[in-house]
Image: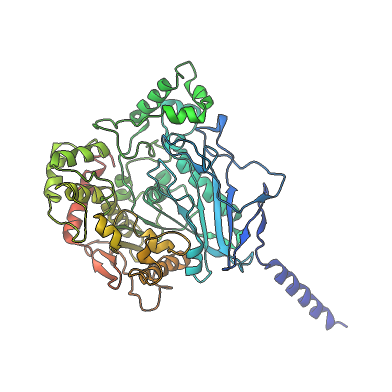
Length: 546
């Protein structure tokens, strides 16, 4: 009889073990609400439009995000929540001030204890729009061999996310768009286990302003305050002009004047303004020292708390979180932004002045030297452009995107772990884009990362298109990094090893992955480009407020 007791105990132990490792159900109980997702035939379950914070309405307008409210009834998680309002946009059915929703994509066969790596993606939009609110993560989950969880979400942008003033600092909260991102990360840390994810293995990523958000999170509180992520992988990081609270005050004052909220408590009045009226009365302002309004009006503010200095300065000092990281950019980052009829240095300089108003004559002289007028055109282009369009787009592209991507990775290698930092340069040519004259434009790499099957992408990436072979290669690197913090361990068989940015802290030999269909390889970064980026690094924080 005694010999039977241990056997029974063993059976009970195994029974409890297997019961605890049940498959994730489409219906998840998050404590504050039950959400029922959709189990798709392809093997990926998705939960869309779940609240990760309370609606930022009424007295919560301009406030830091609060915990989501409790729901008594089961909530359907089968469609995206509304996107956050873009600057000066007209509210529509799919947009709202009530927009703090999160989405999760995961393998349907994941168990509650699978502890799958998590990719937390921050969409772009210049901090003035949600530009990727309906991006589908299914393709990335599939590309990983059903070995990751993908999370996407909305965050406040424009005046609702980044309006700054002394009144807001005193009575409300600054940089709420970034705080929304941090709140969503806290949600992941608390709840992702229920979807089969590992809160201890989270890679943050993004593109454009989403990639800018990545470096803001890396350097938040001087690099010491955000412990809810463990790696970063992003593309086309945007470095714009950074204002402090005092320099941003004029935007608040103008909004107060336009809305007739000039009474004793202007902030309380602004919180009561109807959304449609607020959107209509908001204006595009010229940045201090500029000539015309910039491309992107609102952006994160140096508040001496969350953001403590200019980004160039923080990374040069090593004041950022030291984690494995990937940053990169595309071949023609500036082509879709600079006016195509730019016909002189003066017009090109005016465009740059509006984006970086601290630029002076000495800076423009150097920019003309580094980025001269060029007759270089795309041979297939059918459209005609101004003779200085390429000069302007080359300068703007490197100033805003390419050089920041290189400098961020160099800083990561010098101050962090050289063996855990990678850079890429994306040069995959899509025939229609080449004929249109924009080359390999801003965020072109996204088509390869997310894949054309479930997300989006040019026809050349689909089926038997000429760029279809690059998709599994890029997805292999990306999902490998998400899974192991190394793009090489699970890369596609036959694809080249992606060399780290540098093999020593001297930073003398800088490498990047050159991505081109059929020609992908690790190469040395062009010396002339390094020289141009070194100039931007020297003047970025000290003179250009970047």
